[in-house]
Length: 256
Image 1 (cartoon, rainbow, N blue to C red):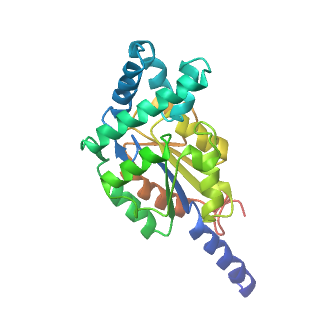
Image 2: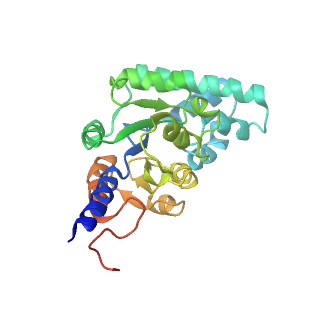
């Protein structure tokens, strides 16, 4: 290898090490073991408003990951006042369940986040809940200092998943990477996958610890499906070794 080739190789290798350095993780079902609390809170909210939860639960399950106020707007036919009342009742019910000790981390999630940070990656936690509920979860788990940034739909203009806004908000606020293809999105729902795809994330990883199965995840754009978020650090280390930042062959690989 001549001196000119050596000069060219160094910056490419530096870029390679910077790949996928922004990781955007969902909370309930991905990093947080929800244990069916979302459905329980929806049931409580519907009953408080005198509604039959059985008529709503299928839609609730299908739209796991979406902003909760958006779900209620659909369920109440665009009646904003009714949707806001239902959303408030849901947030109160979920908060009561969290305060009652009904929530815990997904096994290995905190350790995975620590490992991702040790690898030099910026980690962001996102949710479809309102900020008050997100903070209640973070308080219960002692996670306020676990990551650099936490986002809820209101932090990204009000639209939750499946819109890409929270992923793009993480991209803009952190400045951790230069290209959306260097972003990783991980979640347990089809809407998590759609939000990652629509944001242009380079890796969109589904996990099987929450609402949707492998078919639902891959059918909405998952590039990888993992047993849990605990497997994510190893996946990203493997991708670091195998790919250049933008999916092009590294120097020395076939094609030259």
